[in-house]
Length: 226
Image (tube, rainbow, N blue to C red; front, side):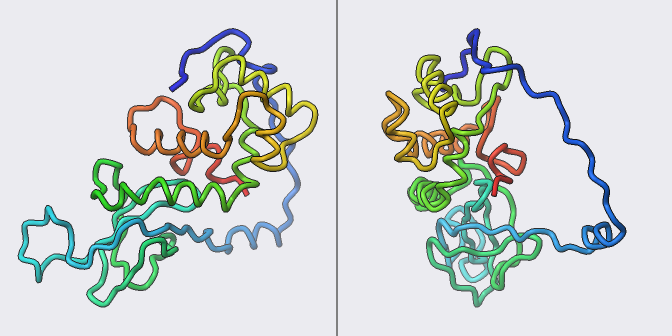
């Protein structure tokens, strides 16, 4: 990973301004107070109808389980399932604020907790999410900003050093990127901008010790982009 900081990483001082507060009417406040939390969904990576292989209980006592990947924030989950649950790989299921029928409970897990089948499926699902949400992920190239005066979010992407980062910054000054093809055409040296993002997501999923996260987790900068 390109964590090395260098002078000039900031294409301008970090923005320290705050948005001006807007007046809220009583009706707006009531609406905000009563609005339901946004539903959170995950894609099924693996379905184990006979439970985990490392579960020492007799087979008839093992709950069926599935592994899932958060659609927006790439969190990893293990689902304990009901006896009558049936899930297929790549099924999209709700996990918050309520779980979909068939899911007793969902708990966060790490990459090392996944079984072999879930790990093999993971990168394909990540790629599908990035591809099907192209606008959101292209906007990372439009919106990426300095982390410190010496380190830029773009430098966290694999293969992007100072020169390629500056190529991206120069290109976007002439207008926002509209697609991955547009990024590739306008930025010399960045041949597969989609795969570059997929590789970074996978790196963040595999390595719990990374200092900076831009895609994985509810607080990741891209998690709440629409």
